[in-house]
Image 1 (cartoon, chains in turn orange, brown):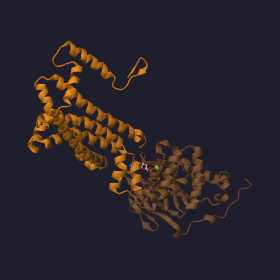
Image 2 (cartoon, rainbow over the protein chains, first blue to last red; image 1 turned 135 degrees about the vertical axis):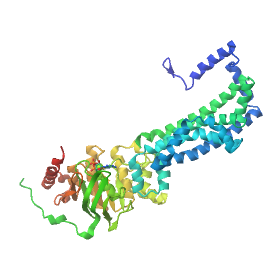
Image 3 (cartoon, each protein chain N blue to C red; image 1 turned 180 degrees about the horizontal axis):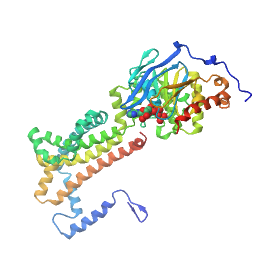
Image 4 (spheres, rainbow over the protein chains, first blue to last red; image 1 turned 60 degrees about the vertical axis):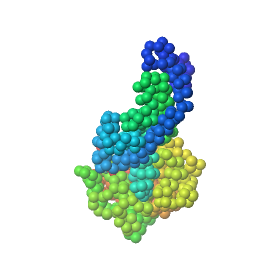
Length: 250
Length: 268
Ligand SMILES: Nc1ncnc2c1ncn2[C@@H]1O[C@H](COP(=O)(O)OP(=O)(O)OP(=O)(O)O)[C@@H](O)[C@H]1O
Ligand SMILES: [Mg+2]
Protein backbone atom coordinates (compact mmCIF):
# COMPACT_ATOMS: atom_id res chain seq x y z
CA UNK A 1 0.00 0.00 0.00
CA UNK A 2 1.27 3.47 -0.84
CA UNK A 3 0.06 6.48 1.13
CA UNK A 4 1.19 10.08 0.57
CA UNK A 5 3.94 8.81 -1.72
CA UNK A 6 5.35 6.58 0.98
CA UNK A 7 5.41 2.84 0.88
CA UNK A 8 3.79 1.39 3.97
CA UNK A 9 4.89 -1.97 5.30
CA UNK A 10 2.77 -4.96 4.28
CA UNK A 11 -0.36 -5.52 6.34
CA UNK A 12 -0.50 -1.93 7.57
CA UNK A 13 -4.07 -1.78 6.33
CA UNK A 14 -4.81 -4.13 9.22
CA UNK A 15 -4.01 -1.27 11.60
CA UNK A 16 -6.87 0.75 10.19
CA UNK A 17 -9.25 -2.13 10.61
CA UNK A 18 -7.94 -2.75 14.12
CA UNK A 19 -8.61 0.90 14.98
CA UNK A 20 -12.13 0.67 13.58
CA UNK A 21 -12.67 -2.54 15.52
CA UNK A 22 -11.50 -0.86 18.72
CA UNK A 23 -13.92 2.03 18.22
CA UNK A 24 -16.87 -0.23 17.53
CA UNK A 25 -15.92 -2.37 20.51
CA UNK A 26 -15.70 0.65 22.82
CA UNK A 27 -19.08 1.88 21.64
CA UNK A 28 -20.45 -1.36 23.00
CA UNK A 29 -22.79 -1.79 20.03
CA UNK A 30 -22.94 -5.56 20.22
CA UNK A 31 -21.60 -8.24 22.49
CA UNK A 32 -20.30 -9.90 19.34
CA UNK A 33 -17.53 -7.33 18.93
CA UNK A 34 -15.52 -6.66 22.08
CA UNK A 35 -12.71 -4.05 21.78
CA UNK A 36 -9.67 -5.43 20.00
CA UNK A 37 -7.45 -4.42 22.90
CA UNK A 38 -9.49 -6.65 25.20
CA UNK A 39 -9.23 -9.47 22.67
CA UNK A 40 -5.45 -9.20 22.62
CA UNK A 41 -5.26 -9.04 26.39
CA UNK A 42 -7.31 -12.24 26.51
CA UNK A 43 -5.12 -13.73 23.82
CA UNK A 44 -1.95 -13.31 25.88
CA UNK A 45 -3.56 -14.90 28.90
CA UNK A 46 -5.09 -17.62 26.84
CA UNK A 47 -1.97 -18.82 25.09
CA UNK A 48 -0.38 -19.52 28.46
CA UNK A 49 -3.12 -21.88 29.56
CA UNK A 50 -2.69 -25.63 29.35
CA UNK A 51 -6.08 -25.98 27.69
CA UNK A 52 -5.00 -23.73 24.83
CA UNK A 53 -1.65 -25.43 24.39
CA UNK A 54 -3.28 -28.84 24.31
CA UNK A 55 -5.76 -27.61 21.75
CA UNK A 56 -2.92 -26.19 19.68
CA UNK A 57 -0.92 -29.41 19.69
CA UNK A 58 -3.98 -31.58 18.97
CA UNK A 59 -4.94 -29.35 16.07
CA UNK A 60 -1.38 -29.06 14.76
CA UNK A 61 -1.01 -32.84 14.87
CA UNK A 62 -4.14 -33.50 12.82
CA UNK A 63 -3.35 -30.60 10.51
CA UNK A 64 0.24 -31.63 9.78
CA UNK A 65 -0.73 -35.25 9.24
CA UNK A 66 -3.64 -34.33 6.97
CA UNK A 67 -1.56 -31.94 4.89
CA UNK A 68 1.25 -34.49 4.75
CA UNK A 69 -1.02 -37.12 3.21
CA UNK A 70 -2.59 -34.58 0.87
CA UNK A 71 0.87 -33.64 -0.41
CA UNK A 72 2.48 -37.07 -0.72
CA UNK A 73 -0.59 -38.51 -2.43
CA UNK A 74 -1.73 -35.41 -4.28
CA UNK A 75 1.51 -34.44 -6.01
CA UNK A 76 2.32 -37.86 -7.55
CA UNK A 77 -1.30 -38.41 -8.58
CA UNK A 78 -1.40 -34.97 -10.20
CA UNK A 79 1.88 -35.54 -12.01
CA UNK A 80 0.78 -38.97 -13.25
CA UNK A 81 -2.51 -37.50 -14.44
CA UNK A 82 -0.65 -34.83 -16.37
CA UNK A 83 1.65 -37.47 -17.86
CA UNK A 84 -0.80 -40.23 -18.69
CA UNK A 85 -3.80 -39.54 -20.84
CA UNK A 86 -5.84 -42.56 -19.73
CA UNK A 87 -5.32 -41.91 -16.05
CA UNK A 88 -6.29 -38.30 -16.60
CA UNK A 89 -9.56 -39.14 -18.31
CA UNK A 90 -10.30 -41.67 -15.60
CA UNK A 91 -9.65 -39.42 -12.61
CA UNK A 92 -10.28 -35.86 -13.73
CA UNK A 93 -14.09 -35.94 -13.35
CA UNK A 94 -13.73 -37.15 -9.77
CA UNK A 95 -11.13 -34.58 -8.89
CA UNK A 96 -13.36 -31.83 -10.25
CA UNK A 97 -16.40 -33.14 -8.41
CA UNK A 98 -14.58 -33.30 -5.10
CA UNK A 99 -12.95 -29.94 -5.64
CA UNK A 100 -16.32 -28.22 -5.73
CA UNK A 101 -18.28 -30.66 -3.57
CA UNK A 102 -19.50 -29.47 -0.17
CA UNK A 103 -17.05 -31.69 1.68
CA UNK A 104 -18.56 -30.76 5.02
CA UNK A 105 -21.60 -32.79 4.04
CA UNK A 106 -19.35 -35.79 3.57
CA UNK A 107 -17.94 -35.71 7.09
CA UNK A 108 -20.80 -37.78 8.63
CA UNK A 109 -20.12 -40.48 6.02
CA UNK A 110 -16.45 -40.42 6.93
CA UNK A 111 -17.41 -40.80 10.57
CA UNK A 112 -19.35 -43.94 9.78
CA UNK A 113 -16.43 -45.28 7.78
CA UNK A 114 -13.51 -44.28 9.97
CA UNK A 115 -14.91 -43.70 13.45
CA UNK A 116 -15.06 -40.67 15.68
CA UNK A 117 -11.36 -40.13 16.33
CA UNK A 118 -8.32 -38.32 15.08
CA UNK A 119 -8.20 -40.57 12.02
CA UNK A 120 -11.39 -39.08 10.63
CA UNK A 121 -10.21 -35.54 11.37
CA UNK A 122 -6.94 -36.21 9.53
CA UNK A 123 -8.84 -37.63 6.56
CA UNK A 124 -11.17 -34.64 6.53
CA UNK A 125 -8.19 -32.29 6.54
CA UNK A 126 -6.53 -34.21 3.72
CA UNK A 127 -9.76 -34.24 1.71
CA UNK A 128 -10.04 -30.49 1.93
CA UNK A 129 -6.48 -29.96 0.71
CA UNK A 130 -5.78 -32.72 -1.78
CA UNK A 131 -7.92 -31.85 -4.82
CA UNK A 132 -6.38 -28.47 -5.54
CA UNK A 133 -2.92 -29.98 -5.04
CA UNK A 134 -3.71 -32.67 -7.61
CA UNK A 135 -5.14 -30.19 -10.09
CA UNK A 136 -2.22 -27.82 -9.81
CA UNK A 137 0.42 -30.54 -10.15
CA UNK A 138 -1.46 -31.80 -13.19
CA UNK A 139 -1.60 -28.32 -14.71
CA UNK A 140 2.10 -27.87 -14.05
CA UNK A 141 2.94 -31.06 -15.88
CA UNK A 142 0.59 -30.37 -18.78
CA UNK A 143 2.28 -27.13 -19.69
CA UNK A 144 5.74 -28.72 -19.67
CA UNK A 145 7.69 -28.08 -22.83
CA UNK A 146 7.36 -31.11 -25.15
CA UNK A 147 10.99 -30.96 -26.10
CA UNK A 148 12.03 -31.26 -22.45
CA UNK A 149 10.20 -34.57 -22.36
CA UNK A 150 11.80 -35.64 -25.63
CA UNK A 151 15.18 -34.55 -24.33
CA UNK A 152 14.76 -36.88 -21.36
CA UNK A 153 13.76 -39.76 -23.62
CA UNK A 154 16.53 -39.18 -26.11
CA UNK A 155 19.15 -39.22 -23.35
CA UNK A 156 17.70 -42.44 -22.01
CA UNK A 157 15.78 -41.35 -18.90
CA UNK A 158 13.91 -44.18 -17.20
CA UNK A 159 10.28 -43.43 -16.22
CA UNK A 160 11.37 -42.93 -12.62
CA UNK A 161 14.18 -40.59 -13.63
CA UNK A 162 11.83 -38.64 -15.87
CA UNK A 163 9.41 -38.31 -12.96
CA UNK A 164 11.91 -37.10 -10.36
CA UNK A 165 14.40 -35.25 -12.52
CA UNK A 166 12.12 -33.59 -15.08
CA UNK A 167 8.36 -33.65 -14.44
CA UNK A 168 8.50 -32.80 -10.73
CA UNK A 169 10.82 -29.84 -11.18
CA UNK A 170 9.08 -28.60 -14.31
CA UNK A 171 5.80 -28.52 -12.42
CA UNK A 172 7.24 -27.16 -9.17
CA UNK A 173 5.97 -23.56 -9.43
CA UNK A 174 2.41 -24.81 -9.95
CA UNK A 175 2.83 -27.53 -7.34
CA UNK A 176 3.85 -24.96 -4.73
CA UNK A 177 0.86 -22.82 -5.69
CA UNK A 178 -1.40 -25.81 -5.19
CA UNK A 179 0.20 -26.67 -1.85
CA UNK A 180 -0.27 -23.10 -0.67
CA UNK A 181 -3.99 -23.11 -1.46
CA UNK A 182 -4.19 -26.65 -0.09
CA UNK A 183 -2.77 -25.46 3.24
CA UNK A 184 -5.40 -22.77 3.53
CA UNK A 185 -8.15 -25.24 2.72
CA UNK A 186 -6.69 -27.68 5.22
CA UNK A 187 -7.04 -25.09 7.99
CA UNK A 188 -10.74 -25.02 7.19
CA UNK A 189 -10.79 -28.80 7.00
CA UNK A 190 -9.17 -29.43 10.35
CA UNK A 191 -11.50 -27.03 12.20
CA UNK A 192 -14.59 -28.42 10.52
CA UNK A 193 -13.35 -31.90 11.34
CA UNK A 194 -12.83 -30.97 14.97
CA UNK A 195 -16.26 -29.38 15.19
CA UNK A 196 -18.14 -32.22 13.57
CA UNK A 197 -16.25 -35.40 14.35
CA UNK A 198 -15.18 -35.14 17.93
CA UNK A 199 -15.07 -31.93 19.85
CA UNK A 200 -11.30 -31.57 20.32
CA UNK A 201 -8.57 -29.03 19.68
CA UNK A 202 -9.38 -25.57 18.38
CA UNK A 203 -12.75 -26.85 17.25
CA UNK A 204 -13.61 -27.57 20.89
CA UNK A 205 -12.43 -24.12 21.94
CA UNK A 206 -14.57 -22.45 19.28
CA UNK A 207 -17.51 -24.55 20.34
CA UNK A 208 -16.97 -23.75 24.01
CA UNK A 209 -16.47 -20.00 23.55
CA UNK A 210 -19.23 -19.40 21.05
CA UNK A 211 -21.87 -21.38 22.92
CA UNK A 212 -20.99 -19.48 26.11
CA UNK A 213 -20.78 -16.13 24.31
CA UNK A 214 -17.15 -15.66 25.35
CA UNK A 215 -16.44 -13.43 22.39
CA UNK A 216 -13.06 -12.18 23.55
CA UNK A 217 -11.73 -15.73 23.76
CA UNK A 218 -13.47 -16.62 20.52
CA UNK A 219 -11.78 -13.81 18.62
CA UNK A 220 -8.44 -14.49 20.30
CA UNK A 221 -8.39 -18.09 19.03
CA UNK A 222 -9.51 -16.93 15.60
CA UNK A 223 -6.64 -14.43 15.49
CA UNK A 224 -4.14 -17.13 16.47
CA UNK A 225 -5.51 -19.35 13.74
CA UNK A 226 -5.42 -16.58 11.18
CA UNK A 227 -1.86 -15.68 12.09
CA UNK A 228 -0.68 -19.26 11.75
CA UNK A 229 -2.44 -19.78 8.43
CA UNK A 230 -1.21 -16.44 7.14
CA UNK A 231 2.43 -17.11 8.03
CA UNK A 232 2.38 -20.54 6.40
CA UNK A 233 0.75 -19.12 3.32
CA UNK A 234 3.26 -16.26 3.13
CA UNK A 235 6.17 -18.66 3.52
CA UNK A 236 4.88 -20.87 0.71
CA UNK A 237 4.24 -17.79 -1.41
CA UNK A 238 7.85 -16.83 -0.85
CA UNK A 239 9.02 -20.30 -1.97
CA UNK A 240 6.74 -20.05 -4.97
CA UNK A 241 8.28 -16.75 -6.04
CA UNK A 242 11.74 -18.18 -5.52
CA UNK A 243 11.03 -20.94 -8.00
CA UNK A 244 8.90 -19.02 -10.44
CA UNK A 245 11.95 -17.46 -12.11
CA UNK A 246 11.99 -20.39 -14.44
CA UNK A 247 8.25 -20.77 -14.89
CA UNK A 248 8.34 -18.55 -17.96
CA UNK A 249 11.26 -20.30 -19.60
CA UNK A 250 10.22 -23.93 -19.43
CA UNK B 1 34.02 -16.27 -64.17
CA UNK B 2 37.46 -17.11 -65.39
CA UNK B 3 38.67 -18.60 -62.15
CA UNK B 4 35.86 -21.12 -62.08
CA UNK B 5 37.18 -24.61 -62.53
CA UNK B 6 35.79 -28.08 -62.32
CA UNK B 7 37.15 -30.23 -59.56
CA UNK B 8 37.33 -33.98 -59.83
CA UNK B 9 34.18 -35.37 -58.26
CA UNK B 10 36.21 -38.20 -56.75
CA UNK B 11 37.63 -36.01 -53.97
CA UNK B 12 34.57 -36.90 -51.95
CA UNK B 13 32.59 -39.22 -54.11
CA UNK B 14 29.95 -41.62 -52.91
CA UNK B 15 31.32 -43.11 -49.71
CA UNK B 16 31.92 -46.85 -49.67
CA UNK B 17 29.13 -48.91 -48.17
CA UNK B 18 31.14 -49.94 -45.10
CA UNK B 19 31.40 -46.34 -44.02
CA UNK B 20 27.71 -45.64 -43.73
CA UNK B 21 26.92 -44.68 -40.12
CA UNK B 22 23.19 -44.24 -40.46
CA UNK B 23 21.05 -45.77 -43.13
CA UNK B 24 17.39 -44.92 -43.70
CA UNK B 25 15.60 -47.60 -45.73
CA UNK B 26 12.22 -47.06 -47.35
CA UNK B 27 10.85 -45.18 -44.39
CA UNK B 28 7.27 -43.92 -44.46
CA UNK B 29 5.47 -41.98 -41.79
CA UNK B 30 1.77 -41.25 -41.53
CA UNK B 31 0.26 -38.92 -38.99
CA UNK B 32 -3.39 -39.95 -38.88
CA UNK B 33 -4.42 -38.79 -42.35
CA UNK B 34 -1.26 -36.86 -43.26
CA UNK B 35 1.48 -38.76 -45.03
CA UNK B 36 4.65 -36.96 -43.97
CA UNK B 37 7.31 -39.30 -45.40
CA UNK B 38 6.87 -41.75 -48.24
CA UNK B 39 9.34 -44.50 -48.97
CA UNK B 40 12.35 -42.37 -48.11
CA UNK B 41 15.84 -43.85 -48.35
CA UNK B 42 19.05 -42.06 -47.49
CA UNK B 43 22.55 -42.97 -46.31
CA UNK B 44 24.64 -40.88 -43.95
CA UNK B 45 28.40 -41.46 -44.35
CA UNK B 46 30.42 -41.77 -41.15
CA UNK B 47 32.33 -38.73 -39.97
CA UNK B 48 30.50 -36.40 -42.34
CA UNK B 49 27.88 -33.75 -41.97
CA UNK B 50 24.71 -34.29 -43.96
CA UNK B 51 22.11 -31.56 -44.21
CA UNK B 52 18.41 -32.13 -44.67
CA UNK B 53 17.04 -29.24 -46.65
CA UNK B 54 13.52 -28.68 -47.87
CA UNK B 55 10.45 -26.50 -47.70
CA UNK B 56 8.64 -26.02 -44.42
CA UNK B 57 6.45 -28.93 -43.42
CA UNK B 58 8.15 -31.43 -45.70
CA UNK B 59 9.07 -33.76 -42.85
CA UNK B 60 12.65 -32.89 -41.87
CA UNK B 61 11.92 -32.88 -38.15
CA UNK B 62 9.86 -36.03 -38.55
CA UNK B 63 12.77 -37.84 -40.22
CA UNK B 64 15.23 -36.63 -37.57
CA UNK B 65 12.98 -37.77 -34.73
CA UNK B 66 12.50 -41.15 -36.35
CA UNK B 67 16.27 -41.55 -36.60
CA UNK B 68 16.52 -40.46 -32.96
CA UNK B 69 14.01 -43.13 -32.01
CA UNK B 70 11.63 -40.53 -30.59
CA UNK B 71 8.95 -41.29 -33.16
CA UNK B 72 7.99 -44.68 -34.59
CA UNK B 73 7.98 -44.95 -38.37
CA UNK B 74 4.97 -46.39 -40.18
CA UNK B 75 7.09 -48.52 -42.50
CA UNK B 76 10.74 -49.15 -43.36
CA UNK B 77 13.71 -49.22 -41.04
CA UNK B 78 16.62 -47.24 -39.71
CA UNK B 79 20.04 -48.75 -39.10
CA UNK B 80 22.78 -47.17 -37.03
CA UNK B 81 26.07 -49.03 -37.40
CA UNK B 82 24.14 -51.88 -38.96
CA UNK B 83 21.82 -52.25 -35.96
CA UNK B 84 18.12 -51.60 -36.38
CA UNK B 85 16.79 -48.67 -34.37
CA UNK B 86 13.87 -49.43 -32.06
CA UNK B 87 14.07 -46.40 -29.78
CA UNK B 88 16.45 -43.80 -28.40
CA UNK B 89 19.95 -45.09 -27.75
CA UNK B 90 23.35 -43.98 -26.48
CA UNK B 91 24.72 -44.02 -30.03
CA UNK B 92 22.68 -40.94 -30.93
CA UNK B 93 22.36 -37.53 -29.29
CA UNK B 94 19.86 -34.80 -30.12
CA UNK B 95 20.37 -31.04 -30.21
CA UNK B 96 17.00 -29.32 -29.94
CA UNK B 97 15.83 -26.29 -31.84
CA UNK B 98 14.49 -24.72 -28.64
CA UNK B 99 17.51 -25.92 -26.62
CA UNK B 100 15.46 -28.06 -24.17
CA UNK B 101 17.57 -27.07 -21.17
CA UNK B 102 16.47 -27.66 -17.59
CA UNK B 103 15.66 -24.13 -16.40
CA UNK B 104 16.23 -25.09 -12.75
CA UNK B 105 19.71 -26.47 -13.34
CA UNK B 106 22.91 -24.57 -13.97
CA UNK B 107 25.03 -24.96 -17.09
CA UNK B 108 27.26 -27.61 -15.53
CA UNK B 109 24.36 -29.84 -14.52
CA UNK B 110 22.60 -29.30 -17.85
CA UNK B 111 25.67 -30.34 -19.82
CA UNK B 112 26.21 -33.32 -17.52
CA UNK B 113 22.53 -34.30 -17.57
CA UNK B 114 22.87 -36.97 -20.25
CA UNK B 115 25.62 -38.61 -18.19
CA UNK B 116 23.62 -38.15 -14.98
CA UNK B 117 20.77 -40.14 -16.54
CA UNK B 118 23.27 -42.86 -17.38
CA UNK B 119 24.37 -43.09 -13.78
CA UNK B 120 27.90 -41.73 -14.26
CA UNK B 121 29.38 -40.64 -10.91
CA UNK B 122 29.11 -36.95 -10.13
CA UNK B 123 32.81 -36.07 -10.14
CA UNK B 124 33.42 -37.98 -13.34
CA UNK B 125 30.49 -36.53 -15.26
CA UNK B 126 31.30 -33.00 -14.14
CA UNK B 127 34.88 -33.37 -15.30
CA UNK B 128 33.62 -34.46 -18.73
CA UNK B 129 31.03 -31.68 -18.79
CA UNK B 130 33.64 -29.06 -17.91
CA UNK B 131 35.78 -30.21 -20.82
CA UNK B 132 32.94 -29.73 -23.31
CA UNK B 133 31.83 -26.46 -21.73
CA UNK B 134 35.34 -25.20 -22.50
CA UNK B 135 35.18 -26.71 -25.97
CA UNK B 136 32.01 -24.81 -26.90
CA UNK B 137 33.45 -21.61 -25.43
CA UNK B 138 31.36 -21.30 -22.28
CA UNK B 139 34.15 -21.55 -19.69
CA UNK B 140 33.28 -19.36 -16.71
CA UNK B 141 29.53 -19.86 -17.12
CA UNK B 142 29.36 -23.26 -15.39
CA UNK B 143 27.32 -21.87 -12.51
CA UNK B 144 24.98 -19.73 -14.63
CA UNK B 145 21.38 -20.69 -15.22
CA UNK B 146 19.80 -20.88 -18.67
CA UNK B 147 17.68 -17.75 -18.14
CA UNK B 148 20.88 -15.81 -17.56
CA UNK B 149 22.30 -16.78 -20.96
CA UNK B 150 21.69 -15.50 -24.48
CA UNK B 151 20.05 -17.71 -27.09
CA UNK B 152 23.39 -18.47 -28.68
CA UNK B 153 24.93 -19.46 -25.37
CA UNK B 154 21.96 -21.68 -24.55
CA UNK B 155 22.38 -23.52 -27.81
CA UNK B 156 26.05 -24.04 -26.96
CA UNK B 157 24.91 -25.66 -23.73
CA UNK B 158 22.62 -27.96 -25.74
CA UNK B 159 25.52 -28.78 -28.05
CA UNK B 160 27.89 -29.47 -25.15
CA UNK B 161 25.31 -31.77 -23.57
CA UNK B 162 25.02 -33.76 -26.81
CA UNK B 163 28.81 -33.92 -27.19
CA UNK B 164 29.46 -35.02 -23.62
CA UNK B 165 27.54 -38.30 -23.96
CA UNK B 166 29.99 -39.19 -26.73
CA UNK B 167 27.37 -40.49 -29.14
CA UNK B 168 28.54 -41.48 -32.61
CA UNK B 169 25.69 -39.66 -34.32
CA UNK B 170 24.62 -36.10 -33.58
CA UNK B 171 21.15 -35.02 -34.66
CA UNK B 172 20.65 -31.28 -34.92
CA UNK B 173 17.20 -29.83 -35.64
CA UNK B 174 17.60 -26.26 -36.86
CA UNK B 175 19.97 -25.59 -33.99
CA UNK B 176 20.86 -22.07 -35.13
CA UNK B 177 17.44 -20.78 -36.06
CA UNK B 178 16.92 -18.99 -32.74
CA UNK B 179 20.21 -17.09 -32.75
CA UNK B 180 21.17 -13.85 -34.45
CA UNK B 181 23.01 -13.74 -37.76
CA UNK B 182 26.51 -13.00 -36.39
CA UNK B 183 26.26 -15.74 -33.80
CA UNK B 184 24.96 -18.04 -36.46
CA UNK B 185 28.00 -17.47 -38.67
CA UNK B 186 30.32 -18.09 -35.76
CA UNK B 187 28.38 -21.27 -34.99
CA UNK B 188 28.72 -22.47 -38.56
CA UNK B 189 32.49 -22.04 -38.42
CA UNK B 190 32.62 -23.83 -35.07
CA UNK B 191 30.49 -26.61 -36.48
CA UNK B 192 32.94 -27.14 -39.33
CA UNK B 193 35.79 -27.39 -36.82
CA UNK B 194 33.73 -29.80 -34.74
CA UNK B 195 33.01 -32.08 -37.70
CA UNK B 196 36.72 -32.08 -38.53
CA UNK B 197 37.85 -32.83 -34.97
CA UNK B 198 35.19 -35.07 -33.50
CA UNK B 199 34.99 -37.95 -35.98
CA UNK B 200 31.25 -38.01 -35.53
CA UNK B 201 28.39 -38.24 -37.95
CA UNK B 202 26.26 -35.10 -38.01
CA UNK B 203 22.72 -34.94 -39.32
CA UNK B 204 21.69 -31.36 -39.60
CA UNK B 205 18.30 -29.88 -40.40
CA UNK B 206 18.20 -26.34 -41.71
CA UNK B 207 15.98 -23.94 -43.60
CA UNK B 208 18.86 -21.97 -44.97
CA UNK B 209 20.33 -22.97 -48.33
CA UNK B 210 23.51 -20.97 -47.70
CA UNK B 211 23.97 -22.58 -44.32
CA UNK B 212 23.49 -26.07 -45.74
CA UNK B 213 25.99 -25.54 -48.51
CA UNK B 214 28.45 -23.89 -46.15
CA UNK B 215 28.62 -26.63 -43.54
CA UNK B 216 27.71 -29.83 -45.39
CA UNK B 217 29.65 -32.69 -46.90
CA UNK B 218 26.37 -33.90 -48.33
CA UNK B 219 23.04 -32.13 -48.82
CA UNK B 220 19.80 -34.07 -49.18
CA UNK B 221 17.00 -32.06 -50.74
CA UNK B 222 13.58 -33.20 -49.61
CA UNK B 223 10.45 -32.49 -51.59
CA UNK B 224 7.14 -31.53 -49.98
CA UNK B 225 4.76 -34.07 -48.55
CA UNK B 226 4.72 -36.95 -48.98
CA UNK B 227 8.39 -36.38 -48.76
CA UNK B 228 11.27 -38.24 -50.36
CA UNK B 229 14.81 -37.35 -51.31
CA UNK B 230 14.78 -35.57 -54.65
CA UNK B 231 18.47 -34.85 -54.93
CA UNK B 232 21.74 -35.44 -53.14
CA UNK B 233 24.44 -32.85 -53.62
CA UNK B 234 28.04 -33.38 -52.51
CA UNK B 235 30.07 -30.18 -52.64
CA UNK B 236 33.56 -31.24 -53.55
CA UNK B 237 35.98 -28.43 -54.04
CA UNK B 238 35.70 -25.65 -51.50
CA UNK B 239 35.74 -27.50 -48.20
CA UNK B 240 39.51 -27.35 -47.74
CA UNK B 241 39.98 -23.79 -48.92
CA UNK B 242 39.55 -22.34 -45.45
CA UNK B 243 36.41 -21.01 -43.84
CA UNK B 244 36.97 -17.45 -45.02
CA UNK B 245 36.96 -18.31 -48.69
CA UNK B 246 34.01 -20.64 -48.91
CA UNK B 247 31.37 -17.97 -49.36
CA UNK B 248 33.26 -16.55 -52.34
CA UNK B 249 33.95 -19.86 -53.98
CA UNK B 250 32.30 -20.29 -57.40
CA UNK B 251 31.20 -23.84 -56.66
CA UNK B 252 29.60 -22.67 -53.42
CA UNK B 253 27.67 -20.00 -55.30
CA UNK B 254 26.70 -22.40 -58.08
CA UNK B 255 25.34 -24.95 -55.65
CA UNK B 256 23.35 -22.32 -53.78
CA UNK B 257 21.80 -21.23 -57.08
CA UNK B 258 21.16 -24.78 -58.16
CA UNK B 259 19.35 -25.63 -54.91
CA UNK B 260 17.33 -22.46 -55.04
CA UNK B 261 16.31 -23.31 -58.60
CA UNK B 262 14.98 -26.69 -57.54
CA UNK B 263 13.26 -25.42 -54.41
CA UNK B 264 11.76 -22.15 -55.65
CA UNK B 265 8.84 -23.83 -57.35
CA UNK B 266 7.65 -25.03 -53.93
CA UNK B 267 7.87 -21.66 -52.27
CA UNK B 268 4.85 -19.69 -53.25
N1 LIG C 1 2.23 -34.72 -34.32
C1 LIG C 1 1.77 -34.52 -35.58
N2 LIG C 1 0.50 -34.82 -35.88
C2 LIG C 1 0.01 -34.65 -37.14
N3 LIG C 1 0.73 -34.15 -38.15
C3 LIG C 1 2.00 -33.82 -37.91
C4 LIG C 1 2.59 -33.98 -36.60
N4 LIG C 1 3.88 -33.56 -36.66
C5 LIG C 1 4.08 -33.17 -37.94
N5 LIG C 1 2.97 -33.31 -38.68
C6 LIG C 1 2.85 -33.01 -40.12
O1 LIG C 1 3.85 -33.67 -40.81
C7 LIG C 1 4.46 -32.82 -41.75
C8 LIG C 1 5.95 -32.78 -41.54
O2 LIG C 1 6.23 -32.11 -40.31
P1 LIG C 1 7.69 -31.77 -39.87
O3 LIG C 1 7.60 -31.08 -38.56
O4 LIG C 1 8.51 -33.00 -39.91
O5 LIG C 1 8.16 -30.77 -40.99
P2 LIG C 1 9.51 -29.95 -41.09
O6 LIG C 1 10.09 -30.27 -42.41
O7 LIG C 1 10.35 -30.17 -39.90
O8 LIG C 1 8.95 -28.47 -41.12
P3 LIG C 1 9.67 -27.15 -40.64
O9 LIG C 1 10.72 -26.88 -41.65
O10 LIG C 1 8.59 -26.14 -40.66
O11 LIG C 1 10.22 -27.40 -39.27
C9 LIG C 1 3.80 -31.46 -41.62
O12 LIG C 1 2.93 -31.28 -42.68
C10 LIG C 1 3.04 -31.53 -40.34
O13 LIG C 1 1.81 -30.88 -40.50
MG1 LIG D 1 11.02 -28.90 -38.27
